[in-house]
Picture 1 (cartoon, one colour):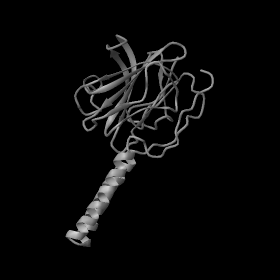
Picture 2: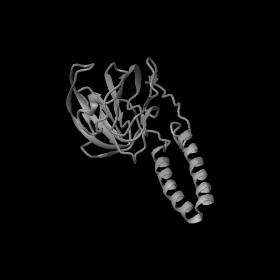
Picture 3: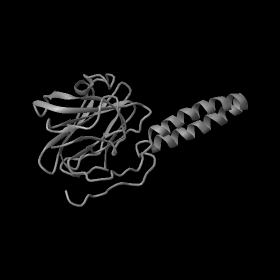
Picture 4: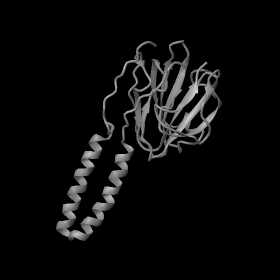
Length: 228
């Protein structure tokens, strides 16, 4: 696609979490001093340690690693998320394609980075959001029945690839940065999903999967498939 455009911002904590982390840190400090005043230093320290541990888990959740895919991106499909492979199979996709596609799904636990990357270079044809249920994200029915956002991307050679962000049992917010009509590139952020969730990628059957079930993935790094 010619020169690849880089739009990355050098941020270590994802922008989706900066306000929450800042406000929760202030709350922990306020609780510590309040308990210290009312009950003494020992209860205040115990509660502060517990809350700080929870805060550090949230900090881990909102990590935003600075990553660049090393190598030629032509025909490559990279993992859109950190997590593990839970589906690698041919599946009927009846919402848009009405035929079989190579479906590759990545499940993200609450301990994973939850930033999402574009898996391919191309152009965003459309973005659609659907309300739905909150089944556990690794269940097959989650792909169609859960709240999700669909991003259709057209590759430089005219093939369509569907990326689906799916809310899980805990997730209650899907954020999609992709916009209709814009060009997109590997290394760019596609969006963010809060708490446990999943990302599906639907590829032409001529694509070759490069991952296996339960294989861990690193977003924007692991090659999950090669397109014909």
